[in-house]
Length: 170
Image 1 (spheres, one colour):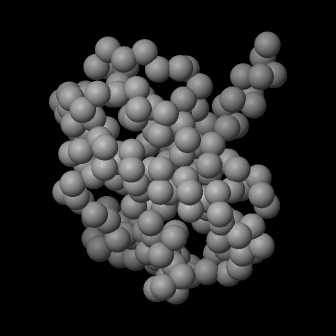
Image 2 (cartoon, one colour; image 1 turned 120 degrees about the vertical axis):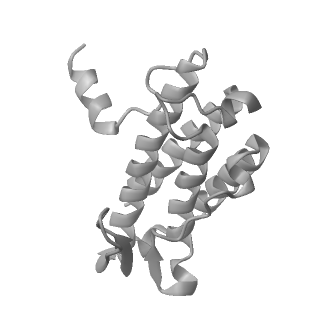
């Protein structure tokens, strides 16, 4: 199960390193109509998913619908980087033994109406989900950065299964 934690750490380190290569202008740029969200907004979203995971200890539920939209972390790169560094510290001290623990999750599931489901899962499964979802948003961050003229390593934001497939093609 340590692999689950290591994978999350790896993806969050990719986020941190990517943010460190970007300037403030790119962090808040909203190059519409190609993109509809900023690097800062995607960063905040990734952090919010991890916060929901982290906060289950106090609320008893991982509520993925709790978001900090319009939070200063969306507009100030140094705040985003600071929160990412704090998240990394937290993940590096996460207790592997708790990954098998059951947990309730809550998540809205419909676009046309406000409908949420509450389901039982495990902390390990949810950490996998959060890391995977974060990689998806990191891929969008990379696309925005490239659109803005930044050179980003080709493996940043790549899904682990895609990387494994590519290794078999060499």
